[in-house]
Image 1 (cartoon, rainbow, N blue to C red):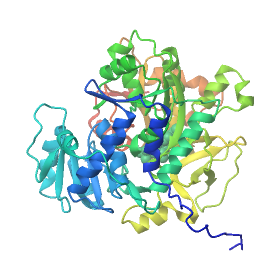
Image 2 (cartoon, rainbow, N blue to C red):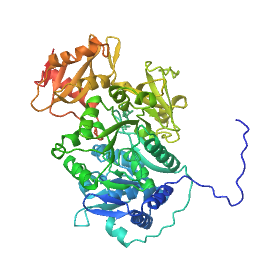
Image 3 (tube, protein in one colour):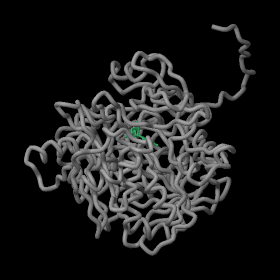
Image 4 (cartoon, protein in one colour):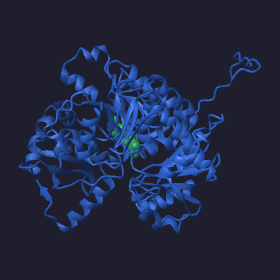
Length: 560
Ligand code: AMP
């Protein structure tokens, strides 16, 4: 250890802990009258948000919630969720943002594993909650969240309804200081194998993530996404990595915030129009859903900036959104990383290039943000060159990455092998520091000794005018190990089969963009592609479906 100079603080010097409460206080300083909006049901200003957070803290404390307890929330995106994201950690408890789209068995597993003591349940999930309640091992009390006129429901150990309890509570709460390394939030990965794993973030990590996101999105000119005049509407569920941390950023900056409840594409477009939303974030499939909405067909979305993450942003979607006036920017992260790690950035050299070159970089995972270190390693953990070509596993360091999995020491140690967080993603890094995600390690298609990126193939296939949606997976093949298989949703009035797809891909092979082994010899035409609980392509389920179709020689299949 270096013998550096560390000077003890003066007597009485305030030792400032990085706590979430600090993020809440600044918003109202910028624009007191800016509003927090919930659908067409409720709107209030920042001073009211601060009061409501204090009221909720009083309600929870009176119900017996203590520092260190875990309090779970089952809700769609709402002002209530925002209030919980502040009040629960601010009293020293941990908010568990339940992924309500997991199966009931998985939800039950996560609630018992997280040791939830107290649960806030939206009336839409009362049936679900009651079905698992008998198997919950740690929950003591419930609280009802509802938009309905009746303010009660048959919930076991119900202490009351949110709005009624808040109305009766004091607007004053003395939020104490405590250790900034206290856990503030927890949630479970949407892992495709085995049980979901619990990640957790401390106050310090979330404050630093908030500062990191606002720096990346607010200060870098080539992406300039966020300023105090922006109007924010999440279209990533708040249970998915705290809506990517943006509610904390928006609150810290005092932005007008619009919470849409359960996502209905027609209503999202209506809210966008009515509230003049300028900034959102989502996974590609949700954007596709919004663009397909009836209300979107004759709408020019000029001025809407959307960050796309959670899956690769392909060129076809970038261009479709651009044609509708939407400015898309790719970003990268995962549940374990808080999530934001990198965001597309174009330096002066790239800005001076052609539009085509610029798009190539706007859709890549981008440059690691300030304080983030990224590298690529081989399977033995050796660092690989950042030459834009060598592929390896992306590993990360940043002050806001989960430091393990809750009660799973072995899996945590694997995540952090060699002191770097292992993402499970194959990537290249180039000399400008740009991360290009090539694929999930487990989704790369290994065929005849070659590695083919399912993401590359999806990108190229999606450029065919008949293709509305595509997913590519590797399917076991006795001769080649694996063969690529494409699942397509076709646009209305169009047709495509395996032969037409081959014709479309051939020029990319001839130009050297694609290996000839990457051309699928079999595809399936479907009306819908299976998605995970957070709207990503569900490749595990897709592989199972394809194997079944092949066994039954299904009519969905088209073969070369
Ligand atoms: P999750 O933990 O469910 O949020 O999933 C994280 C995973 O999503 C990452 O490990 C990547 O495989 C994928 N992902 C996130 N952002 C991107 C991106 N910009 N490009 C490609 N894949 C991405």
